[in-house]
Length: 252
Picture 1 (tube, helix red, strand yellow):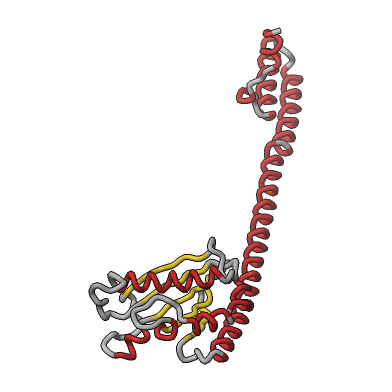
Picture 2 (tube, rainbow, N blue to C red):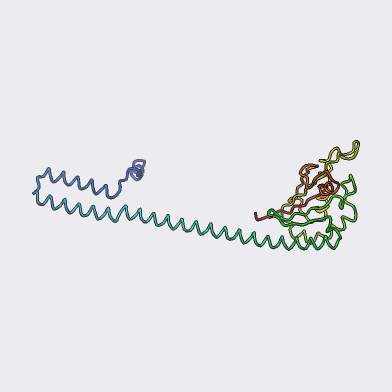
């Protein structure tokens, strides 16, 4: 049984191309005819016929197969290119639809802030990475505090229905302060701590109201770093005390 199995197993690496096999057969016949001292005219006739067969086979054999492979590869290349183009078009369409949705939400938020008389303390912009809502800390918190006032909570709650449309989007809430040092023996050790607590306060509010999913929201705290305006004036410092809510795109 073992011997029969070995005979059935063929190492494909030793198989010769068809044209090479014909060449070997031709050489074998030439040797046999030479040994038999065949008539020279008949020998030349047989040799010519083998050459004709060999040239015909080689013309329709390996070259034909190679040509077929080239056509297949060319067709595969065309298919891959068309699929990539279709995917790119689909991604472009999805981004355009998302941009329209974000633009609609932005306009609605602007109307909501105007209705709440917060338009001078809040700006809403649509940027390349998503919607940016920048809120002046003076409108959200008392001086040196990280607790949202009841009036502010009521105003922010009015935004919930429009923000919930984007509840699946990643959200970043970032806190900033001016460069005025924190009072010693106060509640916060530094401006960093204050900016972090204010960002957490806004995050907790929106998560508790089911506006943002806790799985999609994160906070950032910059303290007095990355100022928006100069800290040399009171107006500049007021602009630097802020909380930014960034609702990021899903389709980048």
